[in-house]
Length: 230
Image 1 (tube, rainbow, N blue to C red):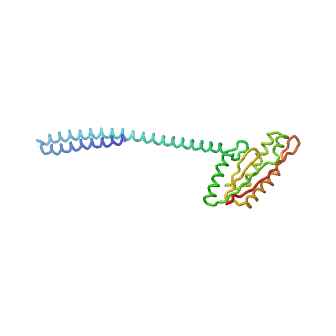
Image 2: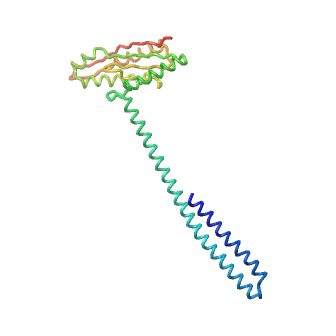
């Protein structure tokens, strides 16, 4: 870079002057008429060397200051770039989460389900890794909406998700398929294991109760279970 070239130039210039003056000193000592003449010549050439050295030191100091400034600018610029990258990554993750999340229930949405089922099918076709599906449907949900209103209906859907998630494993995926239908993808799970999970969910959901104008509101679900077949 420019500072490196300047530093090399400064060193080269000083070495040239030093070499010339040292050669001059040798010639002076050989050609000096008297001791006083020799002292004058040596003093003059030493002063020239000292002057060149002072100039070099000043120039080197300026170069080092420029290098330090550039290093600081690079360090602060790198830190800023890193911060911007982290912010962009966080924004991307938040956007991805928002795009894959059902706004009402907080579960995954149909878009996320479509991507996940493709991945599981690809794993199954390539490695023979089985998986199972649960299709959860709220029973007579239209009657709940018509009788108690959509606010209570929405609350029922939210509670279905809230109560179901703790019963699933970390790698299981619960998504809202549409309306009052939900689907669970259970990787590396056979039909028997999926049926057991489905029954736990069904029993848990039927215990849900709401009070609406002194009336108890209940919701139940029916769950279909299937395992991918060769």
